[in-house]
Length: 416
Image (cartoon, rainbow, N blue to C red; front, side, top):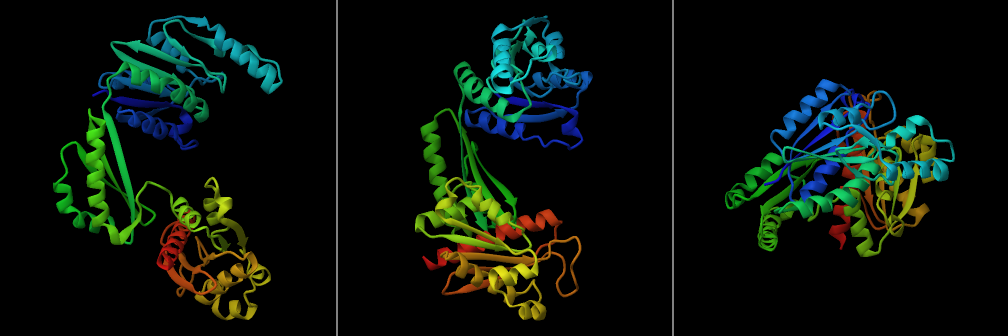
């Protein structure tokens, strides 16, 4: 089987200044055509470390992806290093120079410097991958039967090269197996309990099909993955096993696809031709952000009232000030009134309302940090639930949003 490694270059990755999203995306693209990624390696802008990574990865895999270090500044050392590593000399690549010149003249509207012009220089031993979205061309090398792809670290530039050039090149060059995945999402049962539930099912799986448990935000994704030279047979096998798996976890099943909670909720609303709004205190608009991040959300999402301050709960949502004074902003009574006020003002079919203490301060013995009240419902009924999260502020906000949307999803499905 053909396999791959990904080397990401840049000191900013090692000190945590930049999150490496490139590796995850490249791995997904390679996996989709039957090339598994065996390792992901991050190295700094250090010559010896880069060479060591190239030697180690090429010793055990067939395809090596390299991202980063191709910019115009002195710390971008990848290109001259690769020129030496593969035994070439630098030359000016005219098609790349034309693209760079066009970007500066027509897009940037400023003069091109000599430093920018030098980005069109590439090793004469590489095959150039044109960059139509930036100034650093990609490069393909061959050595000892192994393929190397050096790509810019800028994500959208790298992605275009992989999608438009490299995927088809790899598909045509290698006889690749089919790799298929099917994922479902569960909620309300922990990973260990799921594993106990599925012991017998796992023992029936053939050697080329695996079950993975992927917990996150109180949910567990179950992924069936299979590899075969015959895609249709594999597809039939995976479908059959996926139906079995779905039946076994039916009481906890949230979705039969690998979708974020906001899309699961959105798809349900779209299917029912219903609308929703959100009243947010502790989450500060994060639920609104998640719901509206889905393309087409305007068909079912009307908007949000972010009543972070108590005076806004009264002015915008009609929560009586004496109620807030008596019960506290983080209370069942207040969050229920927030949902009722939102339904009245936005005239939506459903409402989500949240109020809580995200931390790190603000907690009490009675209401410690992580206490959250959530209300969901419609004009006929509002249900509430109290949560106790025990994470940092960011994680508590995320948990609030996910659990509020899941509670809303469960309420809707119970009514339809």
